Image (cartoon, rainbow, N blue to C red; front, top):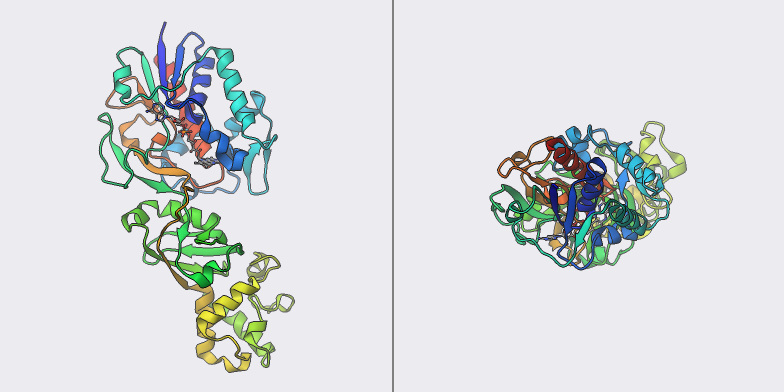
Length: 419
Ligand SMILES: Cc1cc2nc3c(=O)[nH]c(=O)nc-3n(C[C@H](O)[C@H](O)[C@H](O)COP(=O)(O)OP(=O)(O)OC[C@H]3O[C@@H](n4cnc5c(N)ncnc54)[C@H](O)[C@@H]3O)c2cc1C
């Protein structure tokens, strides 16, 4: 009887075990898990609800959601796409539901729906699970097993300091560092605004191409929210090289054209010459939209009612030293300062947040060192890789689990193809 050893009882490990057994019921499959529990990350994922995939309906280019691995995934989605994953779960007794933001969750809103499915299916198919067994070198297992698959997840523990890439078991490794983290910013006046959300901000790192747009949350340590997490993913390697110290630009308006903002400010101060600037808020006069300004600017919802939160406006005005001034006293310089603070507000990232909020690893087994269809090692025949151990990672939204399902499925097919 042919034997497969899977190292790592996480998302990719279980998905591989079940799919390979469905394709080849006679293959003996054993999962080796170092902990005394399997699927721990699935359990805590998505706040305990497990955002297991995404419809990808709002994704026009995979690079937007997979800063690393997009090209390979595009190819592998032909074998097992997000739609296939959706159907797979429904077929295996996990009804799913799609949120407005296109994130997909179990209808039960509980990650245990996925865990129960994996445990039930692996039991039904006769998958062996060996807990408390850490495998240091997968290549040694190739003496006893016909096939070995490494599904050990993120590798930050191998190279905690984002050091230079060093090969693992002879396999090439792309530099490893954390992705999906929040920023610590030492600015007590900003962090006093903790809890405030701006629904559509643009954040960027000056002099780099790294930029993202979305909701921004001010926290008691700095900044978080989808826009920041996305930026941390796009700029993961750059920020690691900078030791997480970097300038950060915030455009609080979500509008990329400074002139639109300028026109809007001029319009509003001309309409309200005697009013204190403190009593106007961006976009200032929602019902009096100047006909010349693009409507999109107002539809995006800055703050709860389409306005910048009042405490944030007051904080920004303090920074410009314009608080207490009447609109007709602002002058050209005052207007420039307002445009600048709204669209080019500068901060200093002091570090990654002190909380263990990093969700995934950037880097891992080099994609050049594996076969692009089967993910078999080019160096060690019959050794395969799937999941986060590979140099593939995505932004939040179910994209990382989708990468785990797709790569695990490709390995299952790859092994089946060898028999
Ligand atoms: C808090 C949190 C929330 C998340 N939420 C989401 C979400 O909602 N949606 C999403 O798409 N992604 C989410 N992610 C990311 C997602 O969990 C991972 O991308 C995914 O789990 C990767 O699957 P994997 O099987 O490759 O690795 P893992 O799920 O990490 O599994 C690897 C397994 O291998 C075991 N192992 C490691 N080394 C060895 C060894 N030497 N010998 C034996 N066993 C070993 C580990 O103990 C672990 O059980 C979240 C991550 C975190 C941390």
